[in-house]
Image (tube, rainbow over all chains, first blue to last red; front, side):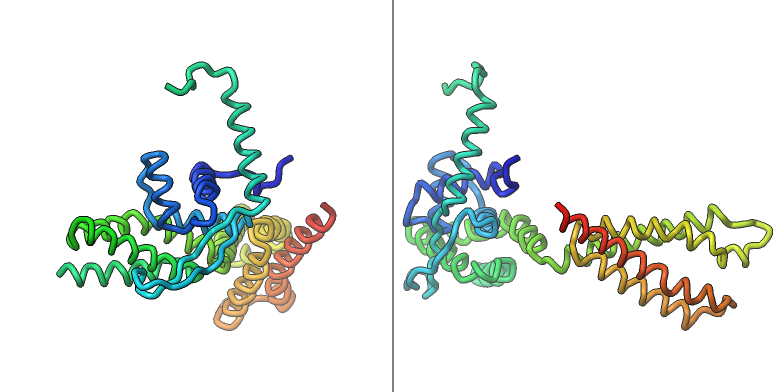
Length: 110
Length: 185
C-alpha cells in the first residue's frame, strides 16, 4: 500500500507540476501565473500559498528565502524547490492517471 | 477611499497568511500590484487586489484552522465530551425506575454500563487526536469536581468516589489501549 503522502489532491498535483516547470524561479506569484498561462485557471494567491504550505508540510517541496527587493516593498521572496519525495509523489500520481485513463477513447486530446 | 480599502485588504491578508509565508505573500502581492498599476491603472490594480482577497479568505482560513493542532485536539475532546454526556443521559434514562426517581441516579449499574462506553469514546478520541483523550479526561475531572462541590443531592461516599474516578479512569484506559495498539502495529 502506498504511503498517504504519495496521494496528491488535484490542486496539489497542479501546483507541484508548476513548481517543477519553474525550476529555480518558483515562488508564489510565478506559480500562480504559470498555472494561469498553462491551464487558464485563475487561482487566488491564497489558494496557491495554502497549497504550497501543505506540500511543504508533506515534505514534497522545500523553501528558502531570497533577497528582499524594492518593488516588493523590501520584502523577500520565498522560493520553492521540489524534493525527491515530491518527484516520487508526482510520478506515482501520473502513473495512476495513465492507468485509469488507458483505453478510454473519449479522453483523447482534441 | 481606495487607499483605505487597500490598507484594510493588506491588513486582512497579513492576518490570514501563515506566519512562515507572511512576508513572501505580502511581497508577492505588492509586486503584482505594482506591475498591474503600471500596466493599467491604480484603480484596476486595487480591484485586482480586493478580488484576490475575496478569493483567498476561504483557503487561507481553512489552512490556518487545519494547521492549528491544539484547536483540532480541543474539537475532538469537546465532541467526545458531548458523546459521554449523551451516553450518560441514555444509560440513566434506560435504567431509571419511574417510581423511585431519586434513587435511579445513584444506581451502580449506571456506572458499570457507562464505564466501557467511556473507554470506547476515549479510545476513538485518542485515535483521532493523540492528546484528545487526555483533554477529555481533564474536562470530565473538572466537571465531576464541580458537581461534587456544588451538588445538593445526598450521595453515599462510595458513589462519590466511584463517580469521581470512573470518567477519568475510563478515558485513561481508552487512551492507553490506543497507545498499546499503535505500538503493536
